[in-house]
Image 1 (cartoon, rainbow, N blue to C red):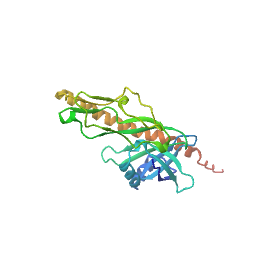
Image 2 (cartoon, rainbow, N blue to C red; image 1 turned 60 degrees about the horizontal axis):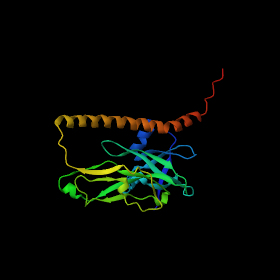
Image 3 (cartoon, rainbow, N blue to C red; image 1 turned 45 degrees about the horizontal axis):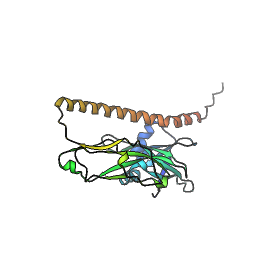
Image 4 (cartoon, helix red, strand yellow; image 1 turned 135 degrees about the vertical axis):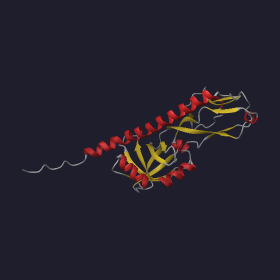
Length: 240
């Protein structure tokens, strides 16, 4: 796997008002954390990183991060949580996680279901229960994705992690083997009450997720804010 170079700038102010201001300037607030070093608050170019995420799944994305144009000391990182605006889909916040070179790390590799199954063509409903699998490997060995050819699956079929033909000796599968990846079942007809209950639950979950995003962002940047507050020089008291 090729490790791309990406760029970031440090920022001194981690307040909410400043985060909103840099978003207006086409930048995305970010935090680099992990390892023995302190957290670093960053600003990322929205267009550049947005294009990166359009071309690659962020769940297993490993990068060399150049901070403040310091090409001599890149940080090896993987992308953590990526937050987007619920309506506009614009990038809101990006977590970046430090890695150690030469040390195996856990990654989430996306699962791609390829093609349309025989069961779906006959009216069956495909349900995918998990969309990624946890593996452990060196950053250079991270698979881009795990593909499953769907053509021969029929109604009633279930596919588990243990059914994967895994022959990569450099990548250790950490997912539980009895986990169901997908199933193809006869469609169930829902009542109006069930549909209304599902819609209400989805709306409540979306509102809760939005609140958690804001809270998570505040917590991630709080240590850096507290540090900057401590480092402010005390004002000299006026002499009488």
